[in-house]
Length: 576
Image (cartoon, rainbow, N blue to C red; front, side):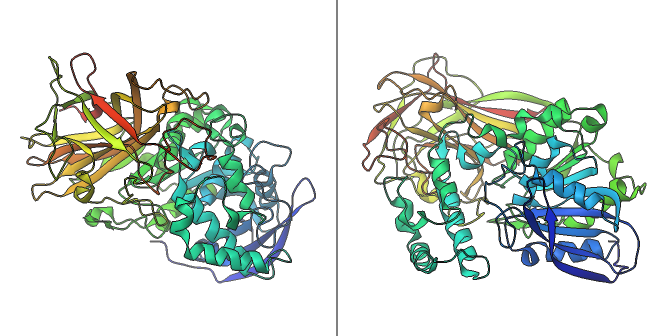
């Protein structure tokens, strides 16, 4: 690790002007010694000193100026909060203007990078297609790139994350008298009580009615999202995937297999590496995915949930980012671009694997078929099996009921970023399960995973939740990856279409991706159900307007796995 060599000075409440006259509040950390230094900018929607301080000290001590800035309307920044719209491609381009301001200060050498993840990763992805001339490189840790899938997955609303996150974010803002609008005392008390009653508000119907968030600054963000449950023009200005060809900057994309932003890292790397504006840009994209959950404090941990991924999972994030920026912003030939284009952590063997591309070129996309089982027990609704051989005859379908009043409880995604591996045996008695025989040899799976279901419902709409688990010899059924699809979005996230009850449809459930060795003696298991609450909102199964109903109905859902309708998983199996 590079040792600190500079004493630093910190200047707070620096006002950065942007093109419409708004002034954004920043704190600047810089080496005390005079001179021109490369600059790293972090734009955040959180309290600056708490969010940026540790990173800022680290880089300023090593010869960088670090600018931490609040996005417009947050804390001491002026303007009206628009959740990224002024970072993107509208009349105002706050990120662009901030980068250009940083690149032209007397303490700047004209080379500017940006840093960190989550919201700070989102602000980087939004700036990239605007191409500020002084922007030299980016390093995005677990950042969101397309805002619609940040709120909805497969058409299902990410209820627990967003209701909890917005309640707490607003509450923290209202606690600070210097930034809270006047007359917010009653709202503050109301929101504090709502946080104590969070479980109640997650079950509250109709979904679009949430009095604790009404008439509160930023609260409208929640309701705006609920009013736009389909992908479309409302969301497109905040979709990096529509602007890959406009990006012309080296980006390091870092994610985790259990990170809620995993799909963004994979999609953004793949899209820019294929469609970036120049060959230099396309060849300067790098991707690293570790076995981690979301958050800077979680990157580099070896113990994640119920799994210990070993010493190789340990990772010094800032030391790694320093090498990236020493190369791009200081011109140091440190070999950072000589390493692998893609590096992923292979769980099960707990080691890093280097790849030439994502998805890997060395895989065969292999169907793993659902097969008939022995029938219901306490451990499963059907005790189905899995096999690489397709069914060649009639097999009885499997059915289950989905009651919105008694949804399948979530084991992950209920508190912050808790998406780590869990043992699902406690819930499998309420689900369809399909389990393979013990493996005779290791099965290496690296790449995107999806489920193809042939199913019907007694209702005009329902959800399909599919999860892949690694079943250990001791019986643990540990989650590897999962996905959800709201049936009305089976053909398009832009144009919903209800089902005809009793009619069979084909559903593709995107389960994102993994890198997992299923060891010899282990078994694969697929779970199928129709809710994962409160991680996602409940589908009321009525086909009615989203978020406006107060009562649902019980649906009977059926999965087919016969020769004509062979439901299956598609696994990216590494070739020998």
